[in-house]
Amino acid sequence: MLIGNFFDLEFKLLDKPLPCDAEACPCDENEVWPEGNSKEDTLVNLEDISIERKKNIIIDWDEERAKNALLNDNEYNSKKVVLNSSSKTIFIQASGPCNSNCAFCSRGSDYEIFNLEVHRRRFENKLYPFISKAERLIFTGSGEFLLLPEAEEILDFFDNGFPHVEKIFSTNGSPLTPRICEKIVNSESKYTIHISLHASNSTLHRVLTRTDNFHKIIGQLEYLLDLNRDTGNPEVFLIFVATTLNIEDLPDFVRLAHQLSVDGVICYYNYIYIPTQKYLSCFFKQELTNKMFNETKEIARRLNIKVDLPPRFGLKEYPNLGICREPWSQIMFTTQGHVLPCDASEDCHESLENKHFMDVWNGEYYQNLRRSLIEGKASCFKHCFRANPSSVNDFSSHVIHRGGRKDIDILWGDNF
Ligand code: SF4
Image (cartoon, rainbow, N blue to C red):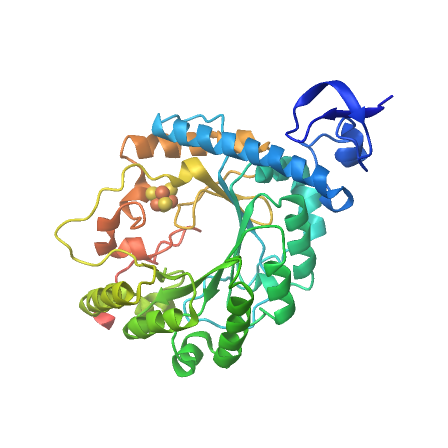
């Protein structure tokens, strides 16, 4: 029978037990890990444990996460193809309903809305122990995560279960109500929020998103930024998907970001998911795009604000970024457990449905991808301007080929 506390505050085993007044004794796995499961199998309800115990458990998890990250760095640096470390970043698709109609949207007509109970039933045992070892958890997917009826419950659940893991999600900003802002600012977790705004003014915002809520979003954002002033949590970045419609607005967008005092601006090129989105690609306005990027860089320097831009077109030289890091450090799961190594990757047929996490992570697809990247033969690398910036000059790099679309990278240059 357990009669005392065998651990000191550093969670080191003591020779003699201390008198135990903890609500849940750390010696008793069944109390700490409910329903008799070990930490490897289940999520812990930290809400019901004393603050001191909770602190100790989080320190323990933090150590495990740091060890995994270090091992992952070593395995990447030594070009290992089969890894003992697990992914540092885990994306879970948590699609929600959407209240916008963005011109560059990637959403198909039938996508599964995220449901926490279903997700737990499907993946709690297989996936969640690896979330605990990751550095960050990214909620991705179509639509608005925060418009899910159970959005607050989902935030609470992951915050309570993985307070040591950074959370990142994107939103168009409209569901960022004061209540949600307060919840995030007061949570245990470190958050980063990407606000998909894309325009510095309401007229252009309306053209791009077909909504009329620019001023509401800015007001809510100001409320959030006011709340996080002292702690810096969450970090907030404004997202600008650069298209032929808004590229000239980028300098003003950076001015707006500075005025709001957000942490920075991240600019992406739009990817072409369907043929009708081709006219939006900055590939067809290369000179103008370069000019706007140069201007933006200068403004960002003057205003001292962080701006992340994609590669410019037609340069004589591009940096060599080395072997793409992503298949060593991240993995994305759809709601059904299907796997993608990154958002720009080719089709991948791995799934968590009938496999364990490490069997997917070290499965044939991942081994081949890592090996081909090391050897410089990966076909995805040829058309990936994130890993291979010079490929920005190839139209195929601006197109998502997944799903077997054969007609999608016909240039259509004549239209411009
Ligand atoms: S090279 Fe590009 S497409 Fe291929 S894995 Fe890396 S980021 Fe993804």
